[in-house]
Amino acid sequence: MKRTEGDTRMQRDLSYTAVFEQAEEGGFVVTFPAIPGLATQGETLDEAAAMAEDCLRAYLESLAIDGEPAPYEAPELPPMRRITVAVAA
Image (cartoon, rainbow, N blue to C red; front, top):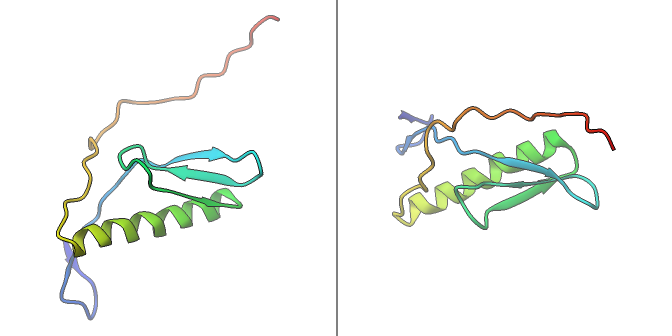
């Protein structure tokens, strides 16, 4: 935990998995599996990532203000890798 400059509140780092999916109309939709219903979007992958950080931070700060705990997500997910194979048609 750390204090932010000029602020008396403690700050802690929280990490959550974000899933980026291409939207049919273009851009990317970002969801958080540990937080059903929380989603955002961006026109580019970089914009979507920035929007995801803002969205997640605002949500977690609102929980803290209301005295609610942050959602639980297992700290380490099993290794994941996208596998591509060629299949004869």
